Image (cartoon, rainbow, N blue to C red; front, top):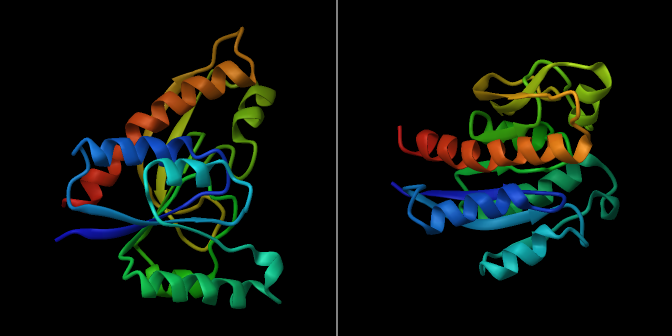
Length: 190
């Protein structure tokens, strides 16, 4: 059975592009990427979606009176598209009750740290500021907390003494771009 997937992203979209490339190469089986959803009208990921001819939608919370009505509009779109599974790829919003109630156990996220360390925004900078020798990448199920869901996969990245934000981010992104498509393929083909 083919899973109809929506990818949510707020920014650059390098993980989105890595997933799309692996899918188009046939390395992610039984998946159709039916929607890219962004909460930012100027997100570069929208250009990436155009490049790969993937339907995109932009919904910004500021156009709604509250989070629940915002998520109801997202949910309506997901239902219209018959979405089975949601992949968060740099989506900088906490998923709320409205979406979780309909997609619990069907949403995954990638985070640039070895959770439970350095949850939330700026995890790469937090790792550098804290002086850790190792950080990495975590892929986890989305629950009601901030990066608190059950971990699916992790990969460690060594932090060298001469690493700065750019060099560490580059190492982390390389791991993310390899690990996320593999995990998605495993989850959709159990």
